[in-house]
Picture (cartoon, rainbow, N blue to C red):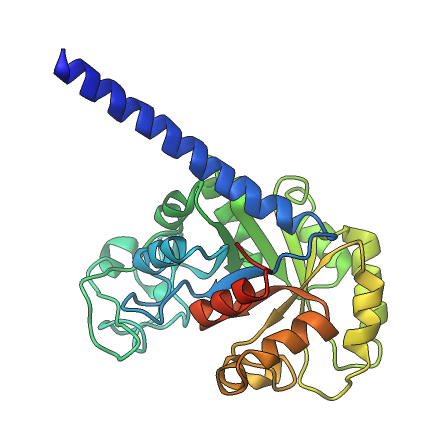
Length: 301
């Protein structure tokens, strides 16, 4: 009898967890798709790797989930046998104890190398496949795929097989006509975000054309600082239509309002991007710093 009660309790907990997890992804996605929602979503660049987890590892995804981060950005390459795997550089030397290019190795060969942590120390972690990463994220956190545009025909079957279309956000720098040609058959199933450098004078027109043609839920904007009027113009252009994403990874992406500046100024650099330039999604290498700052302002749970 006790065993039956215990088994029933475990089943109930499993169902409850699945329901909570599903609600977590739904919650993040609903905020992403609501341009009027002022909550700021936090994206961990290459996963949450500033802890002990290597970048682009399953452990980095787990760490991001535990920390309450909304999305992880992950980099995708193909092995020699056309298996999508996670690694940033394409070559193995910096992030693993192996050598060579991902595309020169089969998955079986790649499994023999181990990932390095942020200090360059070799860990027990191995290079994950995209499928493993999506299953790890499923129901728990959203995923932004980088370096994936040109190989999406091989990525899409993995997304369908894992049932994770709801949590994937794709992106690319291509003009709208190219996106329609290359990505059009997926665009009703997978969220797509244009990436636009907004220093050029014509950047507002570029954003307007992409918005009209693609109706994207978000725009990733990058600015060195050569034209500080464009962020204001584009904020007005996208108001009530699409979310604005800024990166705080290094200063050339945000006119100097990066993570290092935020650590020095108590978060004022984050505030500038949010309050002046309309950032509602921020990709960061210091997600805990950003999360704590947003929570202090009531901009994140």
